[in-house]
Length: 474
Image (spheres, rainbow, N blue to C red):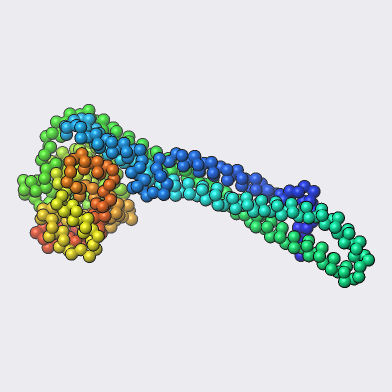
């Protein structure tokens, strides 16, 4: 009752200025003045940020990447390759540019997805939901205060009439008149007091969250800095290597062309007398020692000159492991070998069968791979997939889950029978979603799909022992 009386005194003074702000404390008045500018800033910046995006809102990273101008540029570069012979320097540069533009598109897609989730969506909620609700309560509060002012002026005159009438009326009538006036004033005070409390609570909440709202703009700058730094580092590293390679003669490359890289798996195994291809065996061996906990293995690019030197060594059959300490270069050489095989490791013939089988991969008979793949392909695929399975076990550190590994390696293990340029175009346009759906469960269920006991059953045992030692050393 005392609180309502105090509010009534405040309302009496408000009647002179007709301003609901007079009912707020001084600190809340300052907060109130920031609400409308905050809403305007959030709306304007949200709209301008939307105009900066190069992709469509609401899409996942892969579908977003397909629509980026950078990805379309990468596809155009891949299409242009068909007009050049394999030894053309323009073709070689375009191949590298195609890869780099595709990588930049993936980086931009990831950046815009983070921007949408961490900046755009919070700004939209702030400008379209949170702040409008506060301004709505402000408007209602101001209207109710104005209604009180108007009613007060009317009742001042009317109350005099009631008072004069009550003087000559019976006691019961005097009581009724008094009750009506008192009840009206009390009801109005309660309504104003309730809305004042709600509006004050809204302003206090805004004041406590103001720093969080400001952090949206800081986060925008952080994401931009991270994106531009990653893109700059990638470009700087690869452009210098591309220029060096372009300025050098191709004599060294011609010396080893057709020996291991670019040679069919069966021919290489026959000529070398091995069951596991040299690049697969050597690269896996090095990665077991240096790359199991390396973040982004097979995803991050290495210096092109180092990869080229390692490929040359693998072609020559002599590899100094201590010379190649960058696990990303080793992973790059392994990916390159798989990609340059005339026929994918998982074969052209089984291309469609794999897609049918992936629907039932968990319950797939363990002899599916061994029954359908040639023994040479089976041995090498099993060797590689067992390693990838072990790599995924370190995903908490290296960020390479079975899904992530399948995304970066899947298109190098299985592709349709088509011309080289068309295959490159298919990979560049990121249309290998089905391949990822095949390779991921292979890694997840490697123990059941690739059981021991085949002719090369012991080939991986030494490496597994090595891996256990590596894990213990961590």
